[in-house]
Image 1 (cartoon, rainbow, N blue to C red):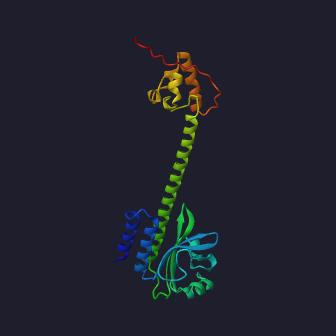
Image 2: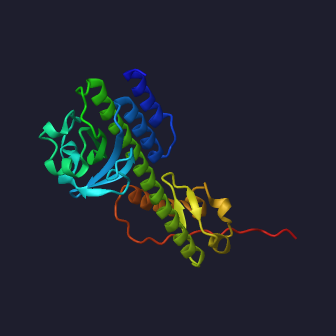
Length: 264
Protein backbone atom coordinates (compact mmCIF):
# COMPACT_ATOMS: atom_id res chain seq x y z
CA UNK A 1 0.00 0.00 0.00
CA UNK A 2 1.07 3.60 -0.56
CA UNK A 3 1.62 6.10 2.25
CA UNK A 4 -1.76 7.66 1.42
CA UNK A 5 -3.47 4.28 1.66
CA UNK A 6 -1.95 3.62 5.09
CA UNK A 7 -3.13 7.01 6.37
CA UNK A 8 -6.60 6.37 4.94
CA UNK A 9 -6.68 3.01 6.71
CA UNK A 10 -5.60 4.70 9.94
CA UNK A 11 -8.53 7.13 9.70
CA UNK A 12 -10.90 4.23 9.06
CA UNK A 13 -9.69 2.45 12.21
CA UNK A 14 -10.55 5.37 14.49
CA UNK A 15 -13.48 6.95 12.66
CA UNK A 16 -15.31 3.97 11.19
CA UNK A 17 -13.93 1.26 13.47
CA UNK A 18 -15.14 -0.11 16.78
CA UNK A 19 -15.99 2.07 19.77
CA UNK A 20 -13.47 0.22 21.95
CA UNK A 21 -10.42 2.48 22.21
CA UNK A 22 -8.00 -0.34 23.11
CA UNK A 23 -9.03 -2.37 20.07
CA UNK A 24 -8.52 0.57 17.74
CA UNK A 25 -5.10 1.42 19.20
CA UNK A 26 -4.00 -2.21 18.88
CA UNK A 27 -5.07 -2.29 15.22
CA UNK A 28 -3.28 1.00 14.61
CA UNK A 29 -0.08 -0.31 16.20
CA UNK A 30 -0.25 -3.39 13.99
CA UNK A 31 -0.76 -1.19 10.95
CA UNK A 32 2.15 1.04 11.95
CA UNK A 33 4.63 -1.83 12.32
CA UNK A 34 3.64 -3.00 8.84
CA UNK A 35 3.93 0.45 7.26
CA UNK A 36 7.20 1.40 8.96
CA UNK A 37 8.65 -2.12 8.65
CA UNK A 38 9.50 -2.14 12.35
CA UNK A 39 8.86 -5.10 14.65
CA UNK A 40 7.66 -3.24 17.77
CA UNK A 41 4.85 -0.79 18.39
CA UNK A 42 3.71 0.48 21.78
CA UNK A 43 1.46 2.98 23.53
CA UNK A 44 2.68 4.43 26.85
CA UNK A 45 1.22 6.39 29.72
CA UNK A 46 3.71 8.78 31.29
CA UNK A 47 2.92 10.17 34.72
CA UNK A 48 5.08 11.63 37.48
CA UNK A 49 8.34 10.59 35.88
CA UNK A 50 7.33 6.98 35.17
CA UNK A 51 6.62 5.31 31.86
CA UNK A 52 4.08 2.49 31.75
CA UNK A 53 3.45 0.34 28.70
CA UNK A 54 -0.33 0.27 28.18
CA UNK A 55 -0.47 -1.64 24.90
CA UNK A 56 2.18 -3.22 22.72
CA UNK A 57 2.71 -5.37 19.65
CA UNK A 58 5.90 -7.33 19.10
CA UNK A 59 7.86 -9.79 21.22
CA UNK A 60 10.28 -7.53 23.09
CA UNK A 61 10.23 -8.90 26.68
CA UNK A 62 10.43 -5.45 28.33
CA UNK A 63 7.90 -3.76 26.05
CA UNK A 64 4.74 -5.50 27.11
CA UNK A 65 1.53 -4.20 28.76
CA UNK A 66 2.12 -3.40 32.42
CA UNK A 67 5.86 -2.89 32.09
CA UNK A 68 7.21 0.24 33.79
CA UNK A 69 10.46 2.12 34.10
CA UNK A 70 11.67 5.58 35.13
CA UNK A 71 11.14 8.03 32.28
CA UNK A 72 14.84 8.93 32.37
CA UNK A 73 15.61 5.34 31.38
CA UNK A 74 13.08 5.22 28.53
CA UNK A 75 13.43 5.89 24.82
CA UNK A 76 10.39 8.20 25.21
CA UNK A 77 12.28 10.56 27.54
CA UNK A 78 12.58 13.29 24.90
CA UNK A 79 9.44 12.40 22.94
CA UNK A 80 7.05 13.57 25.67
CA UNK A 81 8.79 16.97 25.66
CA UNK A 82 8.54 17.60 21.90
CA UNK A 83 5.67 18.96 19.84
CA UNK A 84 6.76 16.97 16.78
CA UNK A 85 7.74 13.29 16.45
CA UNK A 86 11.19 12.12 17.46
CA UNK A 87 12.70 9.95 14.71
CA UNK A 88 15.99 8.15 15.44
CA UNK A 89 17.61 6.09 12.71
CA UNK A 90 20.53 4.93 14.86
CA UNK A 91 19.88 5.07 18.62
CA UNK A 92 23.56 4.54 19.47
CA UNK A 93 24.49 7.68 17.58
CA UNK A 94 21.67 9.89 18.95
CA UNK A 95 21.93 12.22 21.91
CA UNK A 96 18.14 12.02 22.31
CA UNK A 97 18.42 8.44 23.63
CA UNK A 98 20.21 7.89 26.92
CA UNK A 99 22.88 5.23 27.38
CA UNK A 100 20.79 3.72 30.17
CA UNK A 101 17.81 3.32 27.81
CA UNK A 102 19.99 1.61 25.20
CA UNK A 103 21.52 -0.71 27.81
CA UNK A 104 18.06 -1.59 29.13
CA UNK A 105 16.01 -1.99 25.95
CA UNK A 106 18.74 -2.45 23.30
CA UNK A 107 16.74 -0.88 20.47
CA UNK A 108 18.57 0.34 17.39
CA UNK A 109 15.75 2.31 15.75
CA UNK A 110 13.01 4.41 17.31
CA UNK A 111 10.25 6.81 16.25
CA UNK A 112 7.63 8.23 18.62
CA UNK A 113 5.12 11.05 19.04
CA UNK A 114 3.57 12.70 22.08
CA UNK A 115 -0.08 11.88 22.77
CA UNK A 116 -2.14 14.59 24.46
CA UNK A 117 -5.52 14.43 26.20
CA UNK A 118 -7.39 17.63 27.03
CA UNK A 119 -4.35 19.59 25.83
CA UNK A 120 -2.13 17.93 28.45
CA UNK A 121 0.73 15.44 27.80
CA UNK A 122 -0.64 11.95 28.39
CA UNK A 123 1.83 9.48 26.91
CA UNK A 124 3.43 8.40 23.64
CA UNK A 125 2.84 6.30 20.56
CA UNK A 126 6.09 4.65 19.48
CA UNK A 127 7.62 2.18 17.04
CA UNK A 128 11.04 0.56 17.25
CA UNK A 129 13.26 -2.30 16.19
CA UNK A 130 16.27 -4.10 17.57
CA UNK A 131 18.31 -3.22 14.50
CA UNK A 132 19.23 0.25 13.37
CA UNK A 133 17.44 1.51 10.28
CA UNK A 134 19.31 1.79 7.00
CA UNK A 135 17.49 4.94 5.86
CA UNK A 136 16.11 8.00 7.62
CA UNK A 137 12.41 8.26 8.31
CA UNK A 138 10.51 10.11 5.58
CA UNK A 139 8.14 13.02 6.16
CA UNK A 140 5.23 10.71 5.32
CA UNK A 141 6.34 8.20 7.95
CA UNK A 142 6.75 10.79 10.71
CA UNK A 143 3.37 12.28 9.74
CA UNK A 144 1.79 8.81 10.07
CA UNK A 145 3.07 8.42 13.65
CA UNK A 146 2.00 11.97 14.54
CA UNK A 147 -1.47 11.35 13.06
CA UNK A 148 -1.82 8.09 14.99
CA UNK A 149 -0.96 9.86 18.26
CA UNK A 150 -3.48 12.61 17.46
CA UNK A 151 -6.30 10.16 16.67
CA UNK A 152 -5.56 8.00 19.71
CA UNK A 153 -5.50 11.06 21.97
CA UNK A 154 -8.86 12.22 20.61
CA UNK A 155 -10.33 8.76 21.17
CA UNK A 156 -9.15 8.64 24.80
CA UNK A 157 -10.37 12.20 25.39
CA UNK A 158 -13.79 11.37 23.97
CA UNK A 159 -14.10 8.24 26.10
CA UNK A 160 -13.00 10.16 29.21
CA UNK A 161 -15.69 12.76 28.54
CA UNK A 162 -18.35 10.09 28.01
CA UNK A 163 -17.34 8.32 31.23
CA UNK A 164 -17.46 11.58 33.19
CA UNK A 165 -20.86 12.38 31.67
CA UNK A 166 -22.16 8.93 32.57
CA UNK A 167 -20.86 9.23 36.13
CA UNK A 168 -22.46 12.67 36.45
CA UNK A 169 -25.79 11.33 35.21
CA UNK A 170 -25.55 8.43 37.66
CA UNK A 171 -24.94 10.85 40.54
CA UNK A 172 -27.89 12.97 39.42
CA UNK A 173 -30.11 9.88 39.24
CA UNK A 174 -29.04 8.85 42.73
CA UNK A 175 -29.70 12.36 44.04
CA UNK A 176 -33.13 12.42 42.42
CA UNK A 177 -33.95 9.05 44.00
CA UNK A 178 -32.93 10.39 47.41
CA UNK A 179 -35.01 13.52 46.91
CA UNK A 180 -37.95 11.47 45.73
CA UNK A 181 -37.72 9.28 48.83
CA UNK A 182 -37.76 12.39 51.04
CA UNK A 183 -40.72 13.79 49.13
CA UNK A 184 -42.63 10.52 49.39
CA UNK A 185 -42.05 10.47 53.14
CA UNK A 186 -43.17 14.09 53.58
CA UNK A 187 -46.68 15.32 54.34
CA UNK A 188 -45.84 18.75 52.88
CA UNK A 189 -46.70 19.89 49.39
CA UNK A 190 -43.56 19.81 47.25
CA UNK A 191 -43.51 21.16 43.71
CA UNK A 192 -41.26 22.47 40.95
CA UNK A 193 -42.16 25.14 38.40
CA UNK A 194 -40.39 26.19 35.21
CA UNK A 195 -39.49 29.64 33.88
CA UNK A 196 -42.97 29.96 32.36
CA UNK A 197 -44.58 29.52 35.77
CA UNK A 198 -45.93 26.06 35.02
CA UNK A 199 -45.71 23.03 37.27
CA UNK A 200 -43.19 20.45 36.09
CA UNK A 201 -43.56 18.33 39.22
CA UNK A 202 -45.89 18.22 42.19
CA UNK A 203 -45.97 15.66 44.96
CA UNK A 204 -48.77 13.19 45.52
CA UNK A 205 -49.88 15.13 48.61
CA UNK A 206 -51.51 17.62 46.23
CA UNK A 207 -54.51 15.35 45.95
CA UNK A 208 -55.03 15.14 49.72
CA UNK A 209 -54.37 18.85 50.36
CA UNK A 210 -55.85 20.49 47.27
CA UNK A 211 -58.05 17.94 45.57
CA UNK A 212 -55.91 17.80 42.40
CA UNK A 213 -53.94 14.80 41.21
CA UNK A 214 -50.34 15.54 40.17
CA UNK A 215 -51.25 14.69 36.57
CA UNK A 216 -53.91 17.41 36.57
CA UNK A 217 -51.45 20.09 37.68
CA UNK A 218 -48.30 19.27 35.68
CA UNK A 219 -47.92 21.65 32.70
CA UNK A 220 -50.54 23.97 34.25
CA UNK A 221 -49.72 27.49 35.62
CA UNK A 222 -49.29 27.90 39.37
CA UNK A 223 -51.89 30.68 39.26
CA UNK A 224 -54.48 27.90 38.95
CA UNK A 225 -54.20 27.35 42.71
CA UNK A 226 -54.47 31.00 43.74
CA UNK A 227 -57.88 32.34 44.81
CA UNK A 228 -57.77 35.95 43.53
CA UNK A 229 -55.87 38.52 41.47
CA UNK A 230 -54.05 39.93 44.47
CA UNK A 231 -52.59 36.52 45.29
CA UNK A 232 -51.60 35.99 41.67
CA UNK A 233 -49.84 39.38 41.54
CA UNK A 234 -47.92 38.70 44.77
CA UNK A 235 -46.89 35.22 43.68
CA UNK A 236 -45.84 36.46 40.23
CA UNK A 237 -43.77 39.28 41.70
CA UNK A 238 -42.03 36.93 44.11
CA UNK A 239 -41.34 34.39 41.38
CA UNK A 240 -39.89 37.00 39.02
CA UNK A 241 -37.53 38.10 41.79
CA UNK A 242 -36.34 34.51 42.17
CA UNK A 243 -35.85 34.17 38.38
CA UNK A 244 -33.78 37.36 38.42
CA UNK A 245 -31.46 35.78 40.99
CA UNK A 246 -32.62 37.97 43.85
CA UNK A 247 -32.89 36.70 47.40
CA UNK A 248 -36.53 36.04 48.22
CA UNK A 249 -37.80 36.11 51.77
CA UNK A 250 -40.26 33.49 52.89
CA UNK A 251 -43.72 34.34 51.60
CA UNK A 252 -47.02 32.81 52.64
CA UNK A 253 -49.57 32.50 49.89
CA UNK A 254 -53.12 31.31 50.20
CA UNK A 255 -54.01 28.51 47.82
CA UNK A 256 -57.48 27.45 46.90
CA UNK A 257 -58.66 23.93 47.51
CA UNK A 258 -60.53 22.33 44.69
CA UNK A 259 -64.16 21.82 45.48
CA UNK A 260 -65.87 18.92 43.78
CA UNK A 261 -69.61 19.18 43.96
CA UNK A 262 -71.46 15.94 44.45
CA UNK A 263 -74.45 15.25 42.29
CA UNK A 264 -77.46 13.86 44.19
